Length: 205
Image 1 (cartoon, helix red, strand yellow):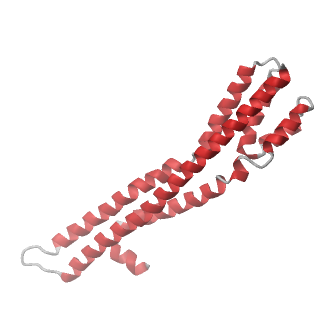
Image 2 (cartoon, helix red, strand yellow; image 1 turned 120 degrees about the horizontal axis):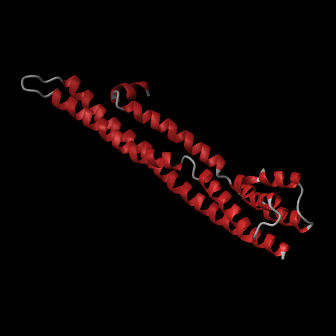
Image 3 (cartoon, helix red, strand yellow; image 1 turned 180 degrees about the vertical axis):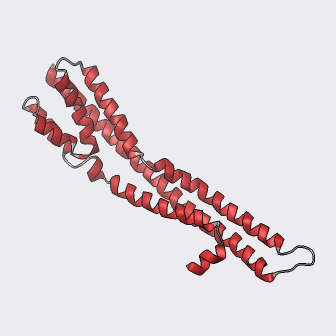
């Protein structure tokens, strides 16, 4: 590996940093976007049961807030009623919608960075290719033929091109995968939140 890095020259270092960052982001998102952290099983049933026996206590609301990201959205509706018992259904819905936007921002965290890496890695590889081509042309000046410099230039060009693609392709694939996961979670959160908002409105009728 060290010999490859030496052969690829200095342009490979930004690509190595991008690969480390991309790997860290992928592992972090794989952990944070698990369904158990977003919409735990039976969360909706627990929220409905807690409100059927009257307005829940502070401990119940706190527990709901700490039960997955969707729990925070559901609890925001209860918080709106807790702060203002005369709040309209529109006020409760608006509070939950705002909490949903914050949750959506949390779901999409680091995805723009991963997309940037997927776009920038091939360009960094191209930069290394250009640097290698410059060295190749420098080795073929008139009356000056240096095989060692020529070989180094070829190595810089090829290694950087290859590493740029090696970094970009998985980053792009995981970005597309995470986008699908986030969209699925957002749809599920929207359905659960809408059902809970209707439930609260029905209890107040």
